[in-house]
Each structure stands twice: as structure tokens, then as C-alpha cells.
Image (cartoon, rainbow, N blue to C red; front, side):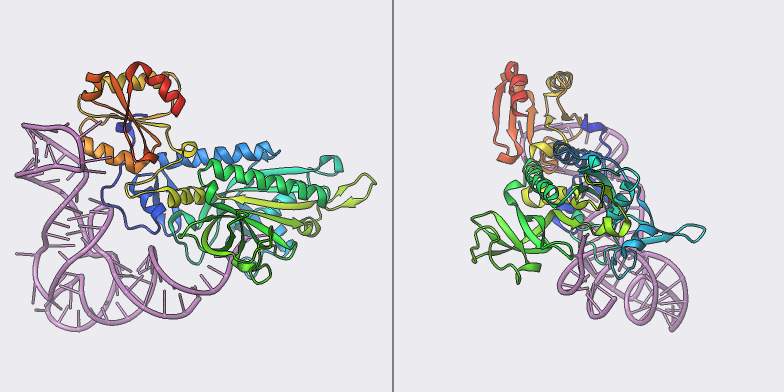
Length: 415
RNA sequence: CGGGGUAUCGUAUAGUGGUAGUAUGCUUGCUUUGGGAGCAUGUGGUCUAGGUUCGAUUCCUAGUACCCCGACCA
């Protein structure tokens, strides 16, 4: 797209925002803060958000997930049955009432509605296992929102729920999700920093597992085994003071961001909500459940926290809003225009800085801030040499000159 | 939820019991063009409600919003 038509603008003076993630995202025009802990996604931000969603969706589909979308307004009844409607159980509820005084809740999670839904759709062992997921808005009345997109009161979460015939089948799928999550975080560009972490399993199992990205901005404290690339959350360090994998005891304390969570649920929800299936022997049984969450917005913030530099954002390839940022500097207008059209025709995803009254310095500074991985500069100089200038945001924009006739091939190989 | 702080153009910030300033942005004009270019020009602001006072953006009270520390956080 042409940058001259992009309605958001960058700000020269960084806004006073909480957390480097929100500061850079606001400064570069990706998001807008509505109020504490509530952010809107603008065109650039939505492009990134959707790419993150796309990666998660691919990985969830690859392990047999079926996407659906439940409502945000929730009936109180199932929650009363499981004993979770009370503010004592879940204190971050946003609740409201219909005109006729009926109580409803704004979704903060979906175990109850999902379990309840399946009562209408499964009845035989042949219907299981079932893996259903959604990207859905959660509302959580956090006492204290903070750190930009890291802890917000309204956010989209990918939540997958698994329903298995028995514990063995559940355990097998649980391991597949672990793998899928590793794939997701490495595709998001934060795989090296993100560790499988043992955490509290609540009342239904010994452990749950979190995916913790090591980062000072994080709110969690974890203890890392450097050899196994595995960690233990502080909340269970008394119970599990050694590496669960190799039993080493010299674990390193680190701050980390919880970018994903997987949780065995057992049959608690099925039991309390009356979800059963008939097994091969004709007996009614409760499916064994699990829940698996990732917040794309928090993931976006984590990417920035881990990968930014002094000049701005440095997007990894797979999540960048555009693959290429084409800058037209003085004397490069017609070359840039031609190259832009050529790349568009090849279906290449490109942001073209065609602004005619913007100085070269400003364009370069904006490009650094926005953080698109591959940059092309076209100017009088490249025109005279019949080249294009190419550089990588992640490599400090070290410049390389490619002959104009080789440009398309080069870009297709490097995008 | 406990404790603390802040509130001034779109953004970032000074300052004052008596006409509110700077930078940046934005308008217009001229000159510029490889790391946020120059000159000129115009535009735009004291959170809300009370109180004290001749006079409050400034002091006081309350409200609201925002931020920080802690607690909390499937």
C-alpha cells in the first residue's frame, strides 16, 4: 500500500506510555489507547495481529483443531452449576443484567459454555476426541492493568478445549499441543527465549504448563534449567525445586512473560455440567478435558519487548505488517513507482513510502520505527547506477546494492 | 484491594494568586532533499464540580482519569 494514504502517522516525540511495547506501537501508529488497559488496533497493528492469528490458526488446524466462535455474552447458569459464578471464585468478572434483571457475564474464559455446547453435539465414543478452538474477546476486570498490551482488560485469546475419551488419549494430545506451541513461538520469532515452564495444576492435576518468554518486562518469576531449556514457575518452586527433566538443582531465577498456557482439566467441568458420552461398552463416561490459551496481543507485545532497538520495532519476517518497505527518496520517484507496480503484480506484500513532501531523513527514521524487515531505497543515486539499495532492519540496515534487472529475483528470494 | 503520585495545545514539557510559554505536529508561502532540513506565517491548551479570594491554571475539598509500589492474576 502507499504510505501517503495510510491514515495513521508516526509521532516524533514518543508518547508517555507504559511499557516499551505500547510506547513503540503507539508512536508508530499501530495501536491507540482508549483507556487504561484497553487498546484499539489500527491498520498496521491489525495487519500484525492478523498474521499472528494466522500462524496460531495454522498450527492449531495442523493438530486437528476445529475453529468456531462462541458468544461474548454468557449465560450465568452453567457457571452457577460449576460454582464459578461467584466473585469469590473469579474476581475479574465483568457482569451485567438484561432489562428483565437476568444476570449475564462478559466472557473471561469459556470452559463452561464450551462444555455446555458439547452436550448438544456429542453422545458416542465415536464423536471423540474433539479439539475445538476460537479467537475470542475476553474481558477481565483487572485491578491493575499495566505494561501496555501485556496485561489488558479486554483482549483476544486463542482458547482451545480438548475432549478425549480417556486419560491416555488426553495425554497424547497434550504433548502434541506442546509441540504446536513451540512451533508457534519460534515462528513468532521468540522461540529461543520461550521456555516450557511447569506451573501449578490447580485442583485437577499435578502440573499445568506455561510458555514463558524470558524478559525483564515480565510479571512472572521462573527458575530456568539452562541445560534442558525448561523452567519452573516460582509458584511451585517449593514443591518442585529441581529441574523436572534432569533433576539439576542449580536453577537460574529470571523474569518472564507468560505467552501461553496449557492446562489439564480432568473431568471436573464435564461432571458438574453433565457432559457424557457412551463408551464401547454402553456405559456413560465423562470426557477428559484440557484447555490451551495464547493471547495474540500479548504475543505481539512480547515480540517487541524482546526484539526492538533504539530506533524502533524490529519485526520478525512472519509477523511483519508488510514484507517490504520501499522508500522513494529524491530523484527516485519514477523508479519507485515502477518497482512498486511490478512487485504488486507479483503479489508481493509491500508498503511504499511515496510521500512527496517528506524529507529523506524522516522517511528513514519512520522506516526504522515501523520495523519492516526488508527495506528498499530508490533514489537519484540508484537510478544513475541502475541499482536498488536493499537492507535488513534486523541487521542495522547495512546496505547492499542489487542490479535493477536482478531486483525481482533477489526480493522474491529474500522476502 | 492497601499505599503513594500526577492532571497545562494532537504529542512531549515549562511556569505563575493578576494577558500561559517552549519544542514538536498541523496550515500557508518560499527555499530545501541520504538520517527526523531552514526562514516566515497561521492554528491550538490549564480534567470536572465546589470553596477561599477583588481576582484561581496556581491554594483548599470532593469527584474523575491516569501512573507507580504492593497484593491479586487458568
